[in-house]
Length: 361
Ligand SMILES: Nc1nc2c(ncn2[C@@H]2O[C@H](COP(=O)(O)OP(=O)(O)OP(=O)(O)O)[C@@H](O)[C@H]2O)c(=O)[nH]1
Ligand SMILES: [Zn+2]
Image 1: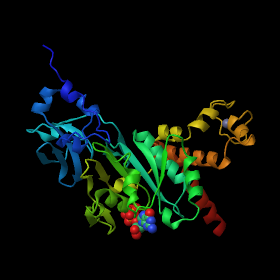
Image 2 (image 1 turned 30 degrees about the horizontal axis):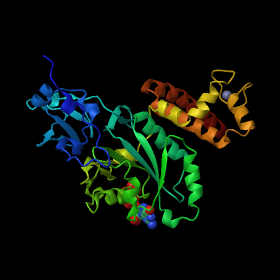
Image 3 (image 1 turned 60 degrees about the vertical axis):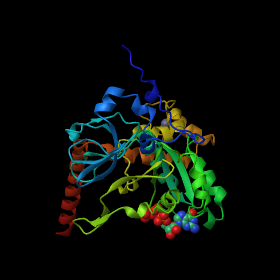
Image 4 (image 1 turned 45 degrees about the vertical axis):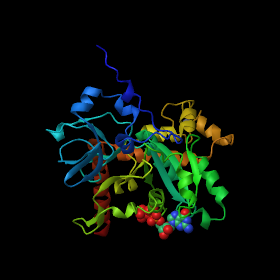
């Protein structure tokens, strides 16, 4: 007997003009991508729940009429969808992710940490002032591409800036695939400007350095919900302030907003694909260099240098590509690779020290 799954398997992402009432799952960000991974039987016995919060007690999971805390032990992160095993919650099945933002933990063990899953849009926020930095924007965009998240560049503080066109033009040089949205985060029009991405059933996040307007924008979307100020700050062992909570907030219109400090401090790691996507034009050009390991410096037959000579390639962009690729490679290096590097670095330091001490004597 074939069962008719069509009713729930075709859960389209609600469109802007869609007046259909939103189900509890819609509001949590349930999409066709997830329903395709399950069936009615499983949904009945193991209902879908989304991880909306990660804290010390475990993972908070919400579904239709479900709100529980799963104790630590499940390899899942905020934004994940699970098919809940009510008896043994830590054995719940984690659904395949639409997108995943990870990072390597700083410090010795360099374990990969899951930051957030199933984000649809990442607003990369910068302001039209000294914060604006093309290299940093490119790095954030590369991260988004690598995580399979759609990046959108948001330029804030346009009300305080005189040469807006310059900023917009520069931001547009980054990638043809990325929209650029200039706005005043404090004005009533901010919500409207982000509306194409902030839709029911979608999950969005803000990324950017401190003071660029992420909280202001988050609050603008929430209409006075004071979302971003709800994060709990605690002192860590070293007396620094850290936000221990990572949380998804749900807007009245049915869109989820992620607020996590981890997102704000992302280092570029394991994002070689993303870097390649941002600099796709240069990467393509480089395939025509004479040598496969061309460093695009002074090698003969370098197609990239030829592009610069012909005025088709911006030399500063090549420079940023190099730096970003190097940063990515360094941060993504395995512990063993780093140890090897550290060893040779350590040797060098020793040599320098012994030379110094000898010359002192
Ligand atoms: N005039 C103007 N002020 C803005 C705009 N966006 C943000 N601000 C102001 O800039 C300051 C910093 O904004 P926040 O929203 O706190 O910045 P943030 O990115 O959340 O900063 P962190 O929480 O430190 O990461 C606040 O005083 C805002 O009112 C803007 O578009 N125009
Ligand atoms: Zn080359």
